[in-house]
Structure formats: structure tokens, C-alpha cells
Image 1 (cartoon, rainbow, N blue to C red):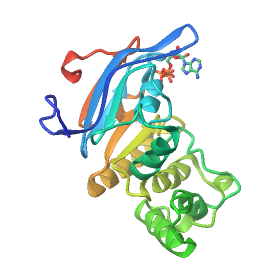
Image 2: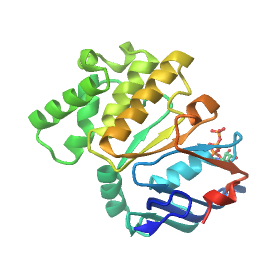
Image 3: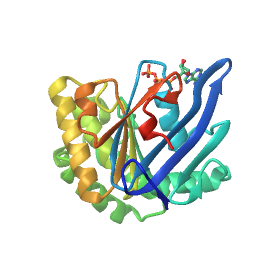
Length: 233
Ligand SMILES: Nc1ncnc2c1ncn2[C@@H]1O[C@H](COP(=O)(O)OP(=O)(O)OP(=O)(O)O)[C@@H](O)[C@H]1O
């Protein structure tokens, strides 16, 4: 693994000099960032500064036009699509602003999806999904449909779905953006304490200083590049 000067720890995930454009819009202009094993990093910055784009490049969802993304020594941006998808399913969890649960599936079925995609048996997947819902304080919601859940409840189910495969890092894009303050704080407390207990790192995009305060470290993006030179290598 790569050594990280900012944290003194080893880098689990490393983006170096990423560039990504959408038509004429340069969303990323040489953005670099590292996340150490088990570290909680908040990615902040003005609207349009490239936070979501950087998160999606790090998560292997978007492919940058230049620069590199390395996870535990493997270059993600170079991997063929199928291998990248496998690595993503095994190593990464993703939580988005509105939970993005499958509306036709119950909460427990939503949490089972990543395990079924990894060819786990149904019974084992259900047992694991129920245990994760319990752990996230959503055990009583197992049979509820997403349409019947509050925003905070949906995010607990989305977090269970992100964590059920035992990822090394969870990417969370404005996970509290659709919640009131109290539900947002509850979601952050559950996310950070659960990540700490599993050893998973968290990369969190947020506008909200109160949410960023849950992180070990803040990285500020401005115009597609990281503002704080101490966070860039
Ligand atoms: N799929 C896309 N197609 C076209 N332009 C895009 C796309 N995604 C992002 N952009 C543009 O790239 C720039 C960076 O967007 P991005 O969503 O990464 O910023 P952000 O910092 O996350 O913004 P916000 O805080 O408002 O969510 C913006 O100008 C945005 O309009």
C-alpha cells in the first residue's frame, strides 16, 4: 500500500491528478486525494466544485480521462469493465442522498441484493441482511416497502445494503441531504460508529459543516481541484 504523509497511515484509496469533463465543463482539473484504511474523510466545497464527480471516479463508477485511482495497490481506472464491477461489488459500499432503494423490494430484500449478486444463497443472504438491519437499528423494518419508510429509515436500510458485503470503504454522497437535522445526526452517528466498528473507511460528500465534523479529516474542492495542499500528494 501507498504511504500517506497526511495521516501517517497507509493509503487504502488514492486518486492522483484526476481530470474529468462533461462536454465543455471541466468537473475535475487535476484532483488528488488519499483515504487511509478506516479513515473518515469529508469532501466539501462549493456547489459545482466537482465533489460528486470525484466520489464517483474514486468509487469506480465514472472513468477519469486522466490521472489514476488506486485501491489497495490495484489501478481501478485501468481495469476492464467486468473486473472493475467485481472489485466495486466486493470492496465498495455506496450510499446516496435519497437511499435509492428498489421500490418493489422490501427493506430486507434490498439489503440482500448485493449478496445475491455475489452468488450467496438466499437463506444465508437473508440472515446476513436481517443482522445488518438490526445492527443499524432498522430490524423492525425488514418487511416494509421503501415507500413506507421515512428518509432516515431509508438511509439506515441503504447503509445496511452498503455494509452487508463487508466493504473496505463506504462512499456516501450527501447521505443526510434529504433529512432534517435530528435524523441527519442519527444517520451520521450510525454510519460513522458502524464504519469504525467494522474498520471500513468512509468518504463523505457534504455541504453541511455539522456533517463534515463527524470526519477525521476534511478535503476541500474548489473548481475541480483540492484546495488544501496538505491533503494533496
Ligand atoms: N453527468 C453530467 N453531465 C453534465 N455535466 C455534469 C455531469 N455531472 C456533473 N456535471 C457538471 O460538472 C461540474 C461538477 O459537478 P459535481 O456534481 O461533481 O459538483 P458538486 O460539487 O458535487 O456539486 P453539488 O454540491 O451542487 O452537488 C458541474 O458544473 C456539473 O454541472
